[in-house]
Length: 441
Ligand code: ZN
Ligand code: ZN
Image (tube, rainbow, N blue to C red; front, top):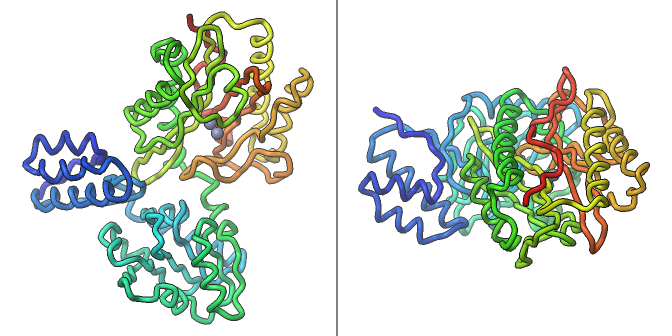
């Protein structure tokens, strides 16, 4: 027996591997599908055929939209299911139902395709977990007999009934927040005396506190985007004369080249467009002597842990006018103040207040139009949210963005963003690349 190299199977890698091995026809078929579920299925098929040809064992984990191979600690998912059961007991939930969304791969390593067909993990408080899944999707699931059993259903079966059978007489049900509404509507119509609540009550406490392996993965992702930001700041990524969309595409390529498994976003906003926090990069050509705001990140997977990166840095394509330099100095001080405030035990809203006070005092308060940050982990945006009204204290292992911004409509804007972990020794910013306004000529 030999081991298959455990590498992410992207379309590029697929073609590289195929050139070494006589499976090129299948690889060509894969490549003819640029993206989406079909590429995913063909990549899986390719991996399985490769494994059979080499008569070797593979450990298949399909935790992202693209087929990936990863090793993970054998008991990781079993341990997470047990933590979920403990939290179900804490909050009085009899059965947990998870469908599409990030909770399912967090507990099982399997990410359901967002199909109209029902996929649902049923975790009773007092019985074995079962994954109801369309039969045609079942081959994508890596078996974890110690974690859950598969319940494949055929095209003419009634999958809602399969879920109802497993819910049984239990009455307190928590359902994943991203489950299609149609499934919840059908369950509500066909179940009597059942109370539904958001599965966030069970899952948020688990997912928002990261263990050492999850933090290590987030740090790797942060270091990867730091390297890209450094290239932006040193002028190694051309800006002037290119469109925002072209620069965005290049950032996306670099996000993947730096080890991410997928790109989540790559905002490039030049000049007046930088006053729109979530600007969609377009055909606007970047000019000399203007700000270029870049906010980008992707999803990285290591040892079965899924984690996102997210960073914002600003570059000025020339010497910035004093008015902009002053605005940026205020932003810099605000971000620093919020990071410094992010100590264990501090209510999340105090982190928001610390930076907002700096911006308010400098007279830019009306231009800071969003919360200071969001948690980050399996998803790019998750709990805890760093916002006024969230008085929950930061805990060891919370990971979140600190990203104040100042946006003057129609004129310009700036944002400065790091991912920070609340650690026993104080705030631990994962992004370390220069925080000053980069000036390139
Ligand atoms: Zn961002
Ligand atoms: Zn962010």
